[in-house]
Picture 1 (cartoon, rainbow, N blue to C red):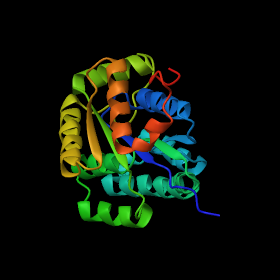
Picture 2: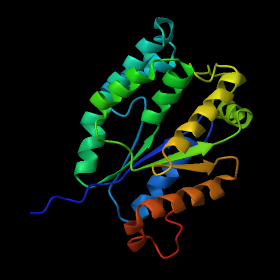
Picture 3: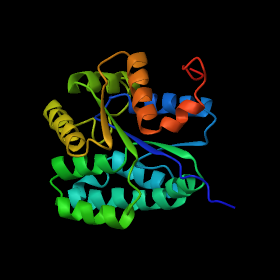
Picture 4: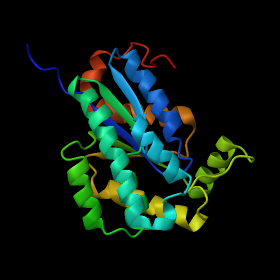
Length: 228
């Protein structure tokens, strides 16, 4: 029996409040409407052990140890996530839609945290190996817009996470760093204008997905709207 065709690995990246979680859920629904097997996941987290590490990271418990320790913790979470969830799903032919992946480490801990990029690249080789995303969707929004969305999402009474507590200057540098990643790898990355309305963002994402995975057009519902 022939091995199943490898699935597609799609990641969504961007700053705080860019709409990644919302658009990831919409993309999963649209892929399901095409009759595909889809796994939705996120980083940090995605597996039970990785979710435990996520809680410590976003609470800021690791931050006092410095950016290298934080990078190592993110990599430990990713190792379990890749081995127990992402790789098995792709090998059985499923699509994987992941909210954040390697580019967030490159940007948050690398560019902004000043962790040696050589260390980050070495960790990627060990943890990820050849399992790079087939398509990375960078949702680009103005930092002030993203922070306002993040505040509205969590509510005024909730505590901001480790990264939402950073000042606007941090988020300006974050945006610049993500755009630089996309410019370095244009064959993998597609920049999506996240300042548009949600429906326009959804359609731009779907167009990018169809361009990267034209086989999905054979299974797309005739309405072209999925089940949204």
